[in-house]
Image (cartoon, rainbow, N blue to C red; front, side, top):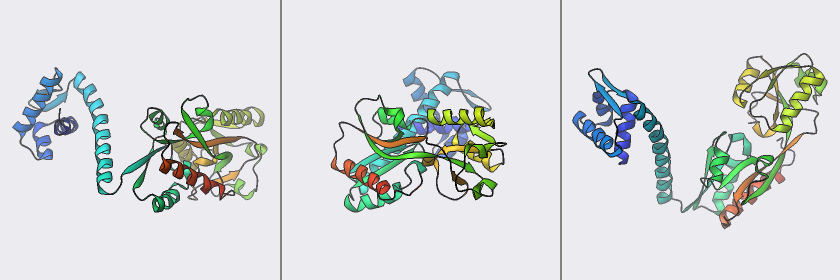
Amino acid sequence: MTTKQMEYILELAQVLNFNRAAENLYISQPTLTYQIKLVEKEIGFELFSRSGKGAALTPAGAQFVGTLRSIYGQLAAAIEQGQNFSAKYSESIRIALPIRSAIYFLPQVIAQFSNSYPAVTIVPSFDWKDGQDAFLRGEYDVTFAMEYTMKRVPDVVCHHLFDSRIYLITERNDPLTKKALITPTDLKGRTLMVGGGSPPVLRALQQRMIQEIHVDYFNSPDHDTTLTNVASHRGICLAPGFLNDHNGEFAWLDFDSDVVIPCGVYTHKNDQREALHAFIQLLQHFYIDQPTFKV
């Protein structure tokens, strides 16, 4: 199967009409039909059922197209990266992040790193759910992680960045913003967002507030949903500082707690490239040189 045939299949699966798909692809309808039939002959089953009204994915076709869409996306990304290499770069450092704020200084680090290593490109990718697993599969050279999640992982090296503290997230006009330090008793009468993939130490803190302070609580599946709920006046939230994007939309208030979440970046033990280690050291120094930065 060629990449062109992949493109034809995905376009037809999108519009479910041979004539319209052919027009969108700038080819003739007989050409599209012929190419689809070639693929169906190769794989041994029909992808589309034909009718006077158009086309429909067969059950097997729907499963095949789902996998093909993922493969085609990865292929397109690989081609783009290859074009970058041919145009300017000879090497890349691929870093997986759960969220952009996890390494707040990454843009400054990339800019400074590029001065010393102009032929090496830093390629960040943001994936909350699968980035760490993709790193372990060898798809990335570096990953950000809360250190407790990688304690028993072999053949990786931890490069500590910071200990993330716990903050209370409120709206900017919340009365609690007038306090220099929020204590657990300040949460009385409030609704606390909980859940959302919180690390164990934060979950324990949330449960302690629920049981000891008797705050109401509301389950929120992820951080973006939590922020939406806070902005909708539905509650407040305890969160680690590395999630703070520092754009001023919400108030991140100091919370009286000794809970910290050590965070770092990880590399593969067998990756000893000079440029990679220079990049990691630069990341670490940005946080060392700014100890008052809230994380």
